Amino acid sequence: MNYDAVRTVINNHFLLKKCMAVVPAGIGLICMLGAATPNSAGMVVPGLLAFAACWYMIATATRQQEECLAQFANFEQKSSSWYRSTYPEFSKNGRVTCRHCGSHKINVRGLGQNTFHREHVCVECGKTLYYSPEQNI
Image 1 (tube, rainbow, N blue to C red):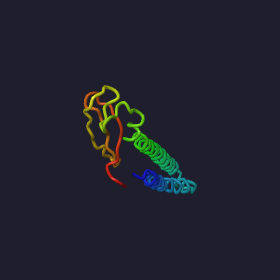
Image 2 (image 1 turned 90 degrees about the vertical axis):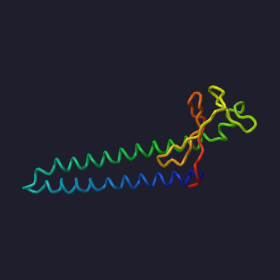
Image 3 (image 1 turned 180 degrees about the vertical axis):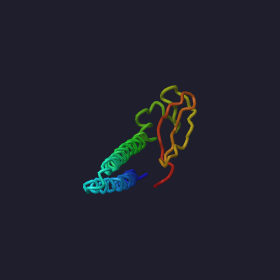
Image 4 (image 1 turned 45 degrees about the vertical axis):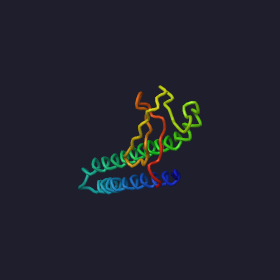
């Protein structure tokens, strides 16, 4: 899996979300500029609310972007090859065993949520061992 391409897609997605926050900022600016006219003093509060909405949208998108990038960094680091090299005593004859309880029973489940990854989990203790990509992106 090309993780650089994944990071680019994630960054572009959240850049678009942040750009969409410009709309309430523009509305807020128009309201506040309109408040400068003699008969529209009641527009200051809607203008401030629009700016607050803009700030909230950008802050939320930034937090989500950081979480998403951290998740993919975890997927990239904790791969099958990482598990086999880090815990060679739990990887013999092509079989992986759980480093927590020693069980050979490992289930694979898709993570969904557009992650395109599978999680390899021990059936006995429920611990996640490593991640693998579902398909090439």
